[in-house]
Image 1 (spheres, rainbow, N blue to C red):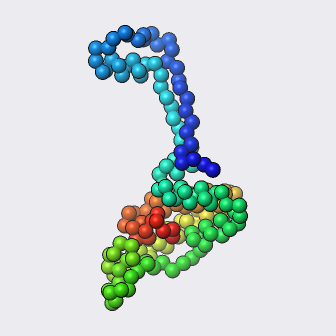
Image 2 (cartoon, helix red, strand yellow):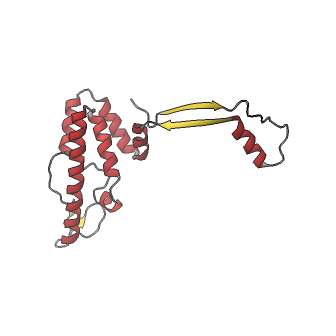
Image 3 (cartoon, rainbow, N blue to C red):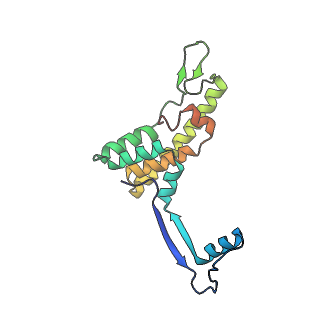
Length: 172
């Protein structure tokens, strides 16, 4: 199981710089100079760790869950059905106050214009998630890694769209 962040680090020595520790420091600047002159740390994140760090914990947890499943064909089917299969591009709405219709997650009134804009965004996201799915399958990527890439793409959508789909609380 992957941890949320995989880190690699190394300490680079600065021996031979000619600076020596002084027994007493007159100010904070001298302390910082002394600390900086003795060592430095370099930390780099793998691209997968960077993706995970940018996503909500619920998505990372789901990724880890999918990765640990024994039946990866089931995982692939799940991802294909959710993210690479044509679907109706309508918002989840409440008709409690019909004829007025409201988005179930945001409470915003759904108008013909807002419904058309949502459908346009949803179809664009579906086209890209389908492209990601197909290209990553062709490369031989694992289903869970495809899920992570798709969620990373979805996370980059406008906040108004994400609220309307209740992301990340509900998966598309």
